[in-house]
Length: 207
Image (cartoon, rainbow, N blue to C red):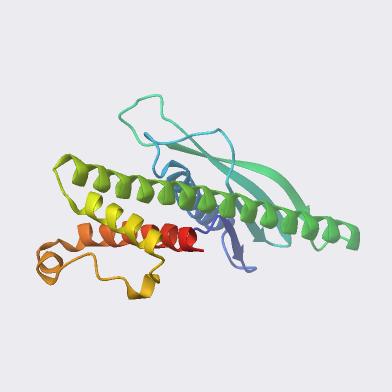
């Protein structure tokens, strides 16, 4: 989860100053998480000068809505700076029309925050998938460079099986037990993924 929508509420005896500090702290943490998602897999921290986090305060019948965005510090050695801006305020206990406007604005900003969060997660997942594929390709290329005969041997067997029409389930294993035991787990996972792709190709050729 990466929360980016917050509400700080205080009762009649609660402090507005405390609510303001709570809203600011929560929003800064939420925006930090959104920036981390947008920056995952990138070369450095990504700043787009947009607000990805919404926070609000409800105190004494007043609803105040704020946005939070991050920006790089003027000093490259310092941490990013976070800025909270008030968007609107509504007297929710004033009249029905003001209440409806406040409730609608609260709901619309909640939907906006959800869109920002889902978009950041989706983009981070896409970069993660691309990174995983690149790592598998690097492992395959390293095997070829180090003179591994497994790729050439498997490819020759795949062509032979395609010509003979032998069902995939009846093909012999491409790896001996000694090779399985000597292969590190990470490399074995990459090799297994590569062989699964070969089997799919062979199946398509037979059909």
